[in-house]
Length: 234
Image (cartoon, rainbow, N blue to C red):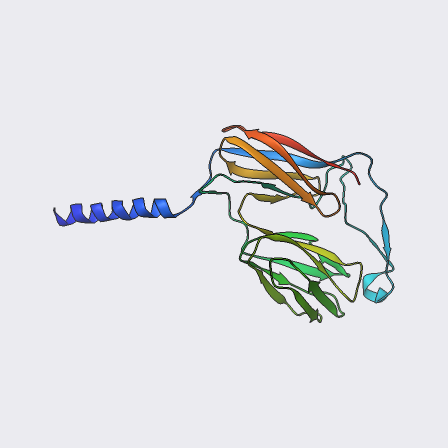
């Protein structure tokens, strides 16, 4: 075997082995749709502010169910229940951030890959406190003065509520995703999941006030599959 043939043979072997070991990025179809409220929209709730009004104001919108004029649900999380084996979508961020501004978590819901990190910020000119008691990840309860960043890594998939003991109305949510086929709805309740191979799937959606629903769908290739997920009002 000549030296050139030996080199080419080695490259071929490495390529084959690498291809077997590395998950492939999914190609083909996609899912586009919206999460909407089914039933009458509840009245908007106001939360009284009894402390630190010079920063927090006198009242806050509850923000546990934000709707567009057409009934689209903001901050719902949508995912494939069982993604195609050996395939990955566009990677979720390994590092993301959640701020505290005017005594509210912003954004209210973040999605991070399992093993990823969230940098919790405090942009308010007062003291906050990060408190959570997850089931699968270590709990945390840490005071946070203005300007300090607290970085927390979440190794295990689950949905985690984050609160502030000093300001009882504050709520935030961390969704730790076990795979990359996850999406967060926008202000209109819309979402998309790209690179989903053709096939049958179960699509699930979660919202902090309405809970979790599921719906079976069939994805074609290459045309987008359009779906509307209806979450019953509570």
